[in-house]
Image (cartoon, rainbow, N blue to C red; front, side):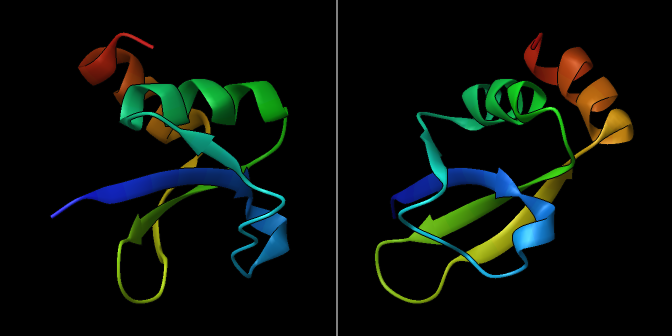
Length: 71
């Protein structure tokens, strides 16, 4: 099973396939989230079905991502 990963501002609430930034992996997604300069949502997008809100990019999850992914 393959999933695509997308990042967009959390304030948007709904997934926007045209406005989001697509990431190559979770490490890349956290890097993108930091660049937005506001709280972002990482979406997991399966090949079939609806995108799923996966996790937020905020100070807490960024600290964890730094430990896990070395972002």
